[in-house]
Image (cartoon, rainbow over all chains, first blue to last red; front, side, top):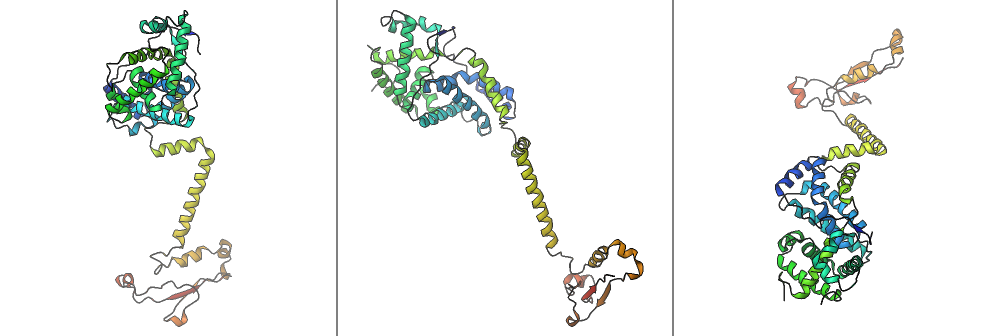
Length: 207
Length: 166
């Protein structure tokens, strides 16, 4: 999967969270309307898949876990009380399943990385960091991708999770706190230590 | 300790490096096919949340004929045992029921009835005391119950009977 550069695709689109629309779809899905649930899957598949993928650094595992998340969520729809948003509830399921999976895997990591989209080569922030490392931009990016994923896998699961949700997915500390059932201060603290460790692991790139 | 988003230089670089992760995308068509894969699995495994336990039970039986047969056998056995228990438990009408006579009569084979002269009707012998009690279970065994008194049957006595064959 690595090596080739895929067609341009917007990176990490942030689907608008529409609680009212979600509630209606959830209600219909509860009554057995699979079309409504299909719509919910379409709304959140990218975020859920990406979260699991960044946690595992393995496409196949992420695909399986994302599927299981949506299936588990469908089975548990009756227990969804609506106290939190559907999005938060779904994230909780994904995070719990992923953490259980990683626990079972017991620290063994098999990277199966996705391709980078063509926008990566033109991302000014990235270009500035890699230009002097390797004259071939795509090769330099591939190398960085591999090192970054390896560094992320060295973090503890709780630290990797906050980096994934905040720095990659763009969720706020409060949203992460709701998902992980902890206060935003804990999220900030974990994020600080995670970044500190990443800084050390990626010392070649951090001046 | 820096705990907020105004990142020091090192952290700012880490944040920029992490942008690589945002450019990682799954194989083409993955998101197009993903919802239908999820829905197909839900459909195939019959995981509908709105179904009652009874609907799930019936669907399970439809998918597993052997289980359905086992459930059927169990239910039939329970019905049979229930019927046997009802039959063997004492009836509240037992003390006054004279239908026993008809039951015995009904048990006489048709050819015996057709034989005519050889058939003798059941004889009923009303006895006054315990001394004459027959080995056959008495028809009236609670002659002084409240029911008998209410119904004006307090003078009924124990009876014995026999059903002669041929």
